[in-house]
Length: 539
Image 1 (cartoon, rainbow, N blue to C red):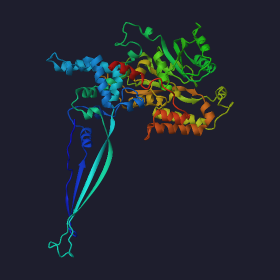
Image 2 (cartoon, one colour):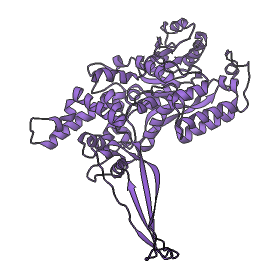
Image 3 (cartoon, one colour):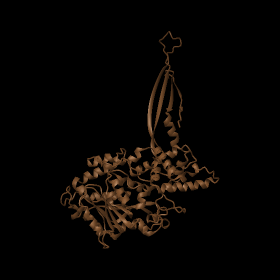
Image 4 (cartoon, rainbow, N blue to C red):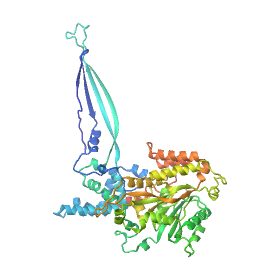
């Protein structure tokens, strides 16, 4: 639609006694700016918008490329196409032709179908999150000042009135400002947008603890939990240009410190350049209870950096809980038992957890530590010096743990763990080469701070938390501090976060060039995997 009008904001007449001048001031708003301004402040009062209930909470993670590639309206049109093709029942009240007299019942049935479609269809959930996100629009205001002056000329005898011709002066001033709005505000009469806005809190609900343990009522109900999740934990290790002998040392340490290693599946994702990986398979071929349940090596050839690599490892894992561990991080004692205890809540269900008023852990991570042992400081890296202890390394630990415990902001080297269904429900890591852990943790923190869930039976569930596991920390290798020094690494890490999340908002590819002084990894495809599936679905 086009709304074209000119509105006079003010018109005033001022008299100047000396020169008998008058000034007319008019304000003119351009057409598009006026339209956006009307809609952004809420064009309707009878519809309940998701933004009026509180700050925005997305359904899934999104890469910067996914946000910049298409506008929210284009994502919304794709969502409508997918719903019409795969979930027509979700549009029943507005596409039905059977003329049902019970409109409220039909709408309730359609709302339940829409909730099911958004919650259990990965493509619909991602499209809904991208379509309903708030975005900024620019309002340009043009102010035009017209001054008409009538000045008496007493030296001119030819002019009997003693007045000269009026002098007209025009000045224009354009100012711009940003206004945050959303499709639900811009289109108050769109039924589907308003329904999604009303049902947003249903879309946000995490899979229940019963679903996380494998008792999903919507998927493969004829299969036992043990068959769907043969392992309790999948330990996912991305490896890029790593030596297999180094990984064997790390896995042997993790094995010795595990409580029940036979329930743990190890997934090593070879992203390229790794050597001597075959001996790793031998670590799972024994039948002792002190050996891994399974060790498998998967090759990742699609490129794109650590985010796509971790997502690929998660897609091949079969554990109930996904634990992401960097290849240079050492796990603490009884790490598997502590992760399960934190996420499983001793086997209780959501209702019992809500009645106990205990928060639910949507994810967990260990405290931060740096391996300062003799073995850790002398790890066989070509870039490090033998037993070199970087000055200030303890200060790095202290400040990192202050960030972790005060702000619930762990990073990827602190071994982030989630239930498998929660990880996929939230979209996994964004499909980008850098800052993938920051984006996932930001979504988890946002849910913990802002989302107040309510169970289906009306019981108010306790809030979510990103749990920091008490006890010994996960130990990160000091090799980067040994190579570049504490001050440089600390400065670069802080600078990258500010450049990424601050005013400039650099892309992950630009950050990669700045951080590693090289081009980002070549991608096998420009689109994310879910966008490729979407293209095949709507073509």
